[in-house]
Amino acid sequence: MKKKTWLLLAAGGAAALGLLAWAFAPRPLAVELAAVTEGPFETAIEEDGKTRLRDRYGVAAPLAGTLARITLREGDAVQAGTVVASIAPVLPAMLDARTRREQQLGVEIAQAQAQRAAARVEGAKVALAQARNTLQRTEQLSRQGFVSPSKLDSDLLGVQAAQKELEAAVEEGHVAAHGVEQARAALMAATRPGAAGHGGFAVRAPVAGRVLKVAQASEGPVALGTPLVELGDTARLEVVAELLTADALRAAPDSAVRIERWGGDGTLEGRVRLVEPAAFTKVSALGVEEQRVRVLIELVSPPAQWRALGDGYRVGVRIVTRALPRVVKAPVSAVFPRAEGGHAVFVVEGGRAREVAVQLGARNGQEAWIESGLAPGAQVIVYPPPATRDGLRVAPRRAACRAAAGVTSVAAASPCGDPRSGVRAA
Image 1 (cartoon, one colour):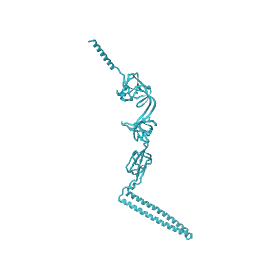
Image 2 (tube, helix red, strand yellow):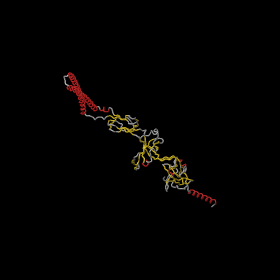
Image 3 (cartoon, one colour):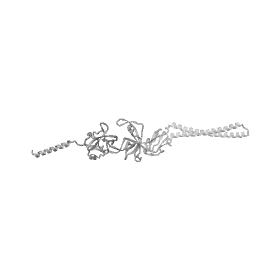
Image 4 (cartoon, helix red, strand yellow):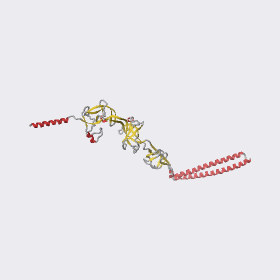
């Protein structure tokens, strides 16, 4: 074999060995990096809430009767004192021919009694006139000395008795006249049922606001206390959130609240007005019994901003429990627990990962407040892979991977591979 052939074989073997050495040589571990920053930090309680009116007014029937059709509809504005319903007296029962004839006879009897009372009045007037004439003659004879004083006194008392009798007869005539009217009214109600509905009781709105619900819009009989209309002022809304009792202890009154996912643009501002003192049991979707308490939130944003909100709308609330203006913070995905206790992060220095113990002040869903152990500007590994260890060579993932996927958060998945497989629990 020629010398040139041996040289070519030797060069090929060396190249193959070089390729094998390069293929099996240890490479830096690709990791996601994020910078430690300094800025505001806050912790909050996130929960779903529901809007409701601070004051609701239910208008009920103050008496039994026949309700006229209510023309108001949901959303109509009313002023205090506006008539919202009208209730007419209840119609009498239907009468048969015998009962109707008895009522007609009752009218005739009442008229006869009225005529008798009128005749008695006339008789009492005649008796009074006679008693006065007798008294006048007795007074003349008494001045002449022909009758005794006792006779004069007797005739005077007779005039007074006749006067009282006339007054009694007049009052009896009034009673008889009212009896005629009463009998006629009963007969009219039986023969003309429509007359019973004339003139009803007006039910008025207690406050100014809007109609939330019309319980009974159609005409019909109603009993005492039947709900008719529900009113409320939609400009006085509040948000109710049901928190776990452990979380409610951190939601102190006057705490700032951010209302999100309410359907409009931006975020609404609010504050905790009241934490109800009594809790209640609620079964979760997983069948777990939870002790919850209602937290009432007052809207602070201008009413014009949330005018579209109504009663019973679902919103998302974020109750701020701690707010710091300037702290050192790192992504919460970079923090993991240490075997010997405490927490640590992997800091990249000189292309190698260095495990650094840190002291946490608090953390939320995205960031961790680092009280000590890190300085702003340090590069930490987020979602460190299971193979990461102290002193291991690491290299940042290609920036183009995240840019191609439009990822802006270090906590998002990378198209070049998911670094969160086997993530250490923070």
